[in-house]
Image 1 (cartoon, rainbow, N blue to C red):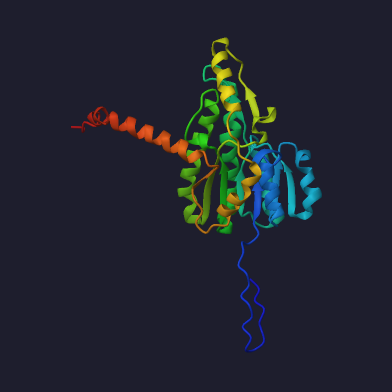
Image 2 (cartoon, rainbow, N blue to C red; image 1 turned 90 degrees about the vertical axis):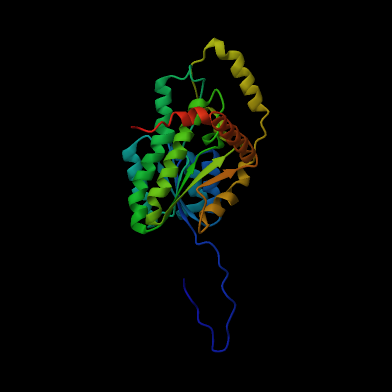
Length: 294
């Protein structure tokens, strides 16, 4: 920080303390939360390496924000492309403060309907793609001595819904990876936060963000009822979320998890209460299985 001396006897006003501008690396910046958060970071004066599968889909950021943004083509399922993009962003800006894994999509179909190839592809993006970005970034963040890894999960990383169970499972895996990661990288001064949005009016329901498993007639009525319930779900405005994200990245001690939206906590609280009640009810059976060896 630069200090400007004042003439003798004049203390002068103390400079206003504000967050230091951040440098971000964001995957999935072309739509949904990725686009909203990229734009918001640039608007507040931060710099962003924005990535998307098609670079043309994020070209407008360069027109608006010039040298403050670097756009890169990136398919997170291509590990070599991931390494190249992360290294290029770091070299371009000189450091990376925030690495935000946001790329992902949902597979629609019951567990019986979901093809194994479709499930593997889902995990390639939602889980392994995120791990590729983390593994590419960590040596650079460790050398810096600081960094903050953010991962876009979901309230469905704690609870599940039918018909999108494979998507939920990818977020449960995502949560476990980031929780373990947080303990592993804390000694290097690197922070980890899992961002868990509820239902928002983003493009997440668009064809680009959904894949559909081949349907079985036996589930048609069940799925129709499920989609009818989804249509009646109250959705939040994604434009209301950037202040929460900035509160996390600007915090000295950010949380491991942050819900976005007001509906998540009551739902998760109920789900965990039900789990605890079940475990308590079956505790005698469980404890009897602990017979010591010998």
